[in-house]
Length: 327
Ligand code: NAD
Ligand code: UDP
Ligand code: UDP
Image 1: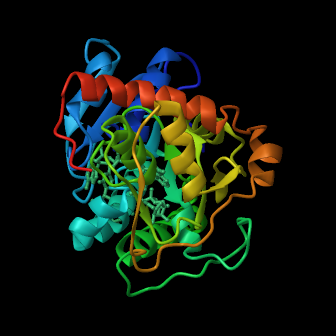
Image 2 (image 1 turned 180 degrees about the horizontal axis):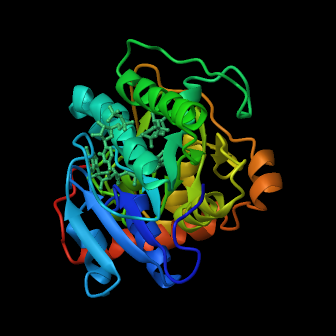
């Protein structure tokens, strides 16, 4: 089994292509000469993210909800459809689980019929509040099955199960990427994620909202690096199924992130402290040995450089008053 077209452009389906990571992935695939079919229901994504791509004759957009069956003809599938920020995925938790689980079943059924590769955008959230640090792929995780984050965490875990069962039972060629916190242009300014929140707050000289003491850690990967990892994974030999961690192993406390953002924006914002959300992981850092050895991949963009690029994006958005900033 392999991709159908061996020569010429591949026709590639990207679900969730109007979102933050998806829009970068679509742009990158087009730049490589591929044909892209973007499928999205615009739940958290936007047309604006796709604006630069709309005039490309190799780009096509279909408004569709992945919880419904999808009959199209493609050579590869990237399954990214799913709200990713805690604020968005907790807004309609039942729909979040449906998107992960029914969405996975539908893209896997599609891949099975087409005999094509399918890549799942899984997440470091499958490790929950991890007791193993840094997280390796063979760690099974520490996840609350009945909490506020469960719709996302357990939905993604079930999607991984489905991917591996379709692989074992139906010989579908799967790729499972466990994506760690990613940031960059095209993030939704009001989705409550820490990088976008802090940058917008700093640019508007509003208080920087730190949850807890800000001693929890995350490791932030710039979106271009992440997209590079996804494309390498898709192109890897058939026996490289993952799960495979994709993220930047440089770990920072949330307080350190706030300090860097304030400095880079020359902001007069002060830190303001709020209660920690329930089940918020205390630490997170990928072990990327597997991605290094199996994909020859590692991130290149340092936090300072990536933040500078993300700040330039949000600065433009604030200046042009393109959206109301609710942070
Ligand atoms: P995002 O919210 O910007 O993008 C998700 C996209 O999926 C949006 O365009 C949204 O409209 C679309 N979508 C949601 N539900 C859908 C449905 N039922 N049918 C069709 N489209 C639907 O999020 P993102 O940060 O770009 O994340 C993309 C993927 O990567 C997600 O699957 C997410 O779980 C995963 N991921 C992201 C991160 C990160 O740090 N950004 C980390 C780990 C995993
Ligand atoms: N599916 C789809 N597009 C296809 C093929 C299948 O959306 O081109 C959906 C199909 O509707 C089904 C799901 O994928 O609900 C799983 O398909 P599979 O063939 O594995 O299961 P079955 O149809 O036998 O239940
Ligand atoms: N966070 C924060 N202030 C904010 C938004 C988030 O202190 O305004 C914290 C949050 O509690 C978490 C970390 O930053 O510990 C990362 O949050 P995010 O929602 O970006 O991602 P996730 O928790 O899914 O890793």
